[in-house]
Each structure stands twice: as C-alpha cells, then as structure tokens.
Image: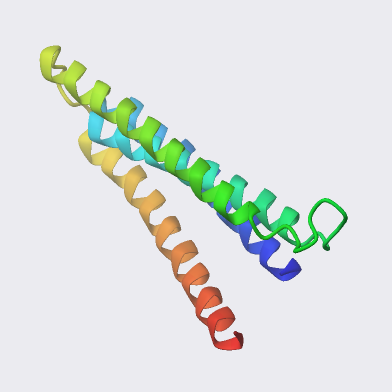
Length: 141
C-alpha cells in the first residue's frame, strides 16, 4: 500500500499542472467550456488529495477504537469526491447559464486550444500510468 502513495503524488502534481494550463486556456479564450474543464481538473486535484490521505489512513494498523483497521476511510473518500463533483457541476451549470444570457466573443482560440491540448496529453499519460499500476495491483489480489 505504501508504494501507491507515490502515484497519488503523480496525480496531485499532474492535476496542479493541468489546472494551471486550463485556466490559462480559459483566460486566453474566454471559453466557458475551457473553464468547465479547469473546474473538472479541480475535482481531479481534490480527488488526488483525498486518495493520498485515505491511503495514509488505511495503512494504519488496527487499534482499540478501530479493531478491524481503518479501511472505511475509502468510503468517506468516495463520499467527499461525490460532493466535489456535485459542486463542480453546479459551478459549470451556473457559468454556462451566465454565458448564455451574457455572451462574450471567444478570443485566441488556437492558442487556447493548444494549451488545453497540452493539458490533455499530460492527463492521458498520467491516466495510462495509473491504469497500468491498477492492473498490476488487481493481478496481485
């Protein structure tokens, strides 16, 4: 379990980079869809942080108050992620309706899409790495 924590560092680092890149793309283009993509990356960041802390908690041995261990931390992390997704969706809906009623022209589309594509490539490679690690872990169990 301890070796999994290094992959949460990878997730956290990638999420921070993609948030930064996607916000740059949003500010360059003024595109609500790129803003919603940045908000989704915030959820990824929160999920990576939650996974990090959940893994730290799950590793603790059973004790007087938790005779069966700390594995229920996973359930709480799932609930927290669901809450983050819910609030992110509200933010995206609000932004979309706001832009619908107060439209603004898109700017520097090519540059914004380039920056967003770089973020997508980073996400792709991190995702592939995490899938590969997950498959290895499933084979061990």
